[in-house]
Length: 102
Image (tube, rainbow, N blue to C red):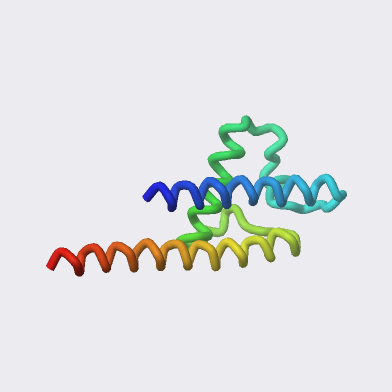
């Protein structure tokens, strides 16, 4: 479970770094800019980033926070793969543990 929390936190922080990097390179229209996060507290920015990471990694994808630039879309694809792999490993390990109990 802690691995899942760690991966989600790491993905959220990278999501924020990618967006801020895009802004530093004069890219307009990032998710960060579309949500007017300049006025948000650090807690709100972190919470929104974790929300995006969780929704993306679980394939729920609510659609309220989504990638807008090419770099954000490429990063989202990477996180989808990481999320599928992480959940697959987690559930596979859980299945082995349950199987060994019987």
